Image 1 (cartoon, rainbow, N blue to C red):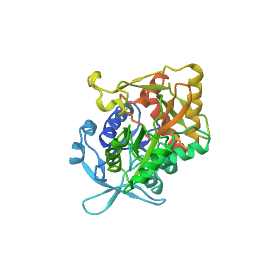
Image 2 (cartoon, one colour):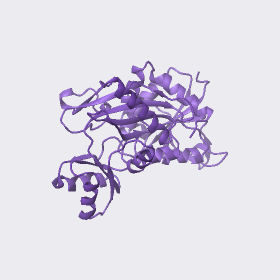
Image 3 (tube, rainbow, N blue to C red):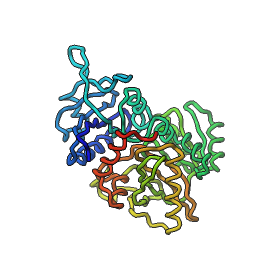
Image 4 (cartoon, rainbow, N blue to C red):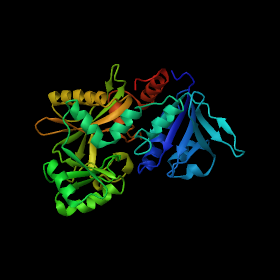
Length: 363
């Protein structure tokens, strides 16, 4: 039951995944349409302005058109009497009645703890991981260190900072066991800025691409194996639920570039990868994948929901790749597909998450 709750759906954001957020939000709004929620739409522009949008929901997926009409600036006020307010033309503030916030944001500024901290300061309950977990999972270096300290196998990794010299780069590659390596923005989302580097001649360009998105870059051991995903919901103090595990099938010998929804409807021959659900791995390995997925979720203090991505090597070893604390929620995204395969439609999952957030999640 939705209990006629007033839900603010946050979408957009300042990251490179802004457009994906719009598509995720469009699907979320469609899924929530059959429930008795009173929805308030709050969009974040590419420049970081928060706007209360009261126009046609269909415009949300049409690029930045939504931000040009039927909007008023939003102010977050911290404290016990805080919350979301419209900033009116006469300079006064008008409260936007909200019981809970559903962030449908991806990448830096929305999935990394920044938005979560703002909501906590304004005493607004919200769906998903808290400040610490969001920040940890966004930072691949930090999440790998903590997961590794918990006994979970992680890739060999070294960190470089913008302006690093050639000696530091060589040392980072050696720390990962030599080429090939993956070069990634340490706090990036999806596969933006990620390069597979086969030798030193490719490193300069890879670093340039990664540093354009983050002053901190992660150099990681290239794991040989299959990437699998675990869609998990719940709080670590209670029982966790996992959807059907999926796997990515890469066709060009490279890596899974970005979740499939970005090119939904495209000719399959132009895509480097596809998804298979359920994953085709032996039963004993599947059990290790599930155990590891839950262990990662708990080790990184996740709550609400998240997608834990793992590698499975040819020998059956399970290794952490990364955690998405607000995974894609479009019709084509992995998280909804994995839950659907387990008999859980997205509307029901969202309803469960919203009610749990109102009740007070274990963060």
